[in-house]
Length: 233
Image (spheres, rainbow, N blue to C red):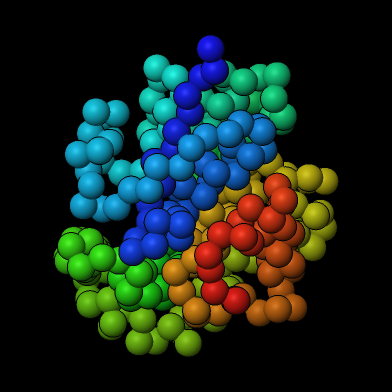
């Protein structure tokens, strides 16, 4: 009997515009492992739908009778459960380095992008979700969504500088993972795809090695990420 696999993914008013950076990490990981899963669109106000899986946020991956929440936990589950499929980490050393990069991706890449695009994310949400998003995210930012974005033309320069470790790496090798992408690349790519899905604001200059790397990942797996709704940034 075929195993039923499902992935709860964050969306807004459009079910096909999935945009969570964490969900995109998982999407890329599943494609890397060549594992198909049905997308279950999920919104902030639908916490009851994932509560049975001991989570209040997505992604949540259902693999038969097993449910796994959190993108890093899902990546480890896929690596350990499907060792016959292409490796996400390339060994235990790669997994250990991936753990560090996961924190770097959350704090530097995702954390740097969020204030600049939060107001644009809000515009893609249904009214009930907008109220939740504004309340929780403005508490996190300590200012309104509009105030957070007001200086983004200046703030983006500091954000670009913060990416120098990634930029310097990509000047010496095609991917963070080396000759081909692995989960380290998907960690960093997730936030850029999140921004592309929700905001017309341009985070990267076209002559930036990170821009060229992002373009390659947009085309990976048959253009899966590029074919998902997004802005031309």
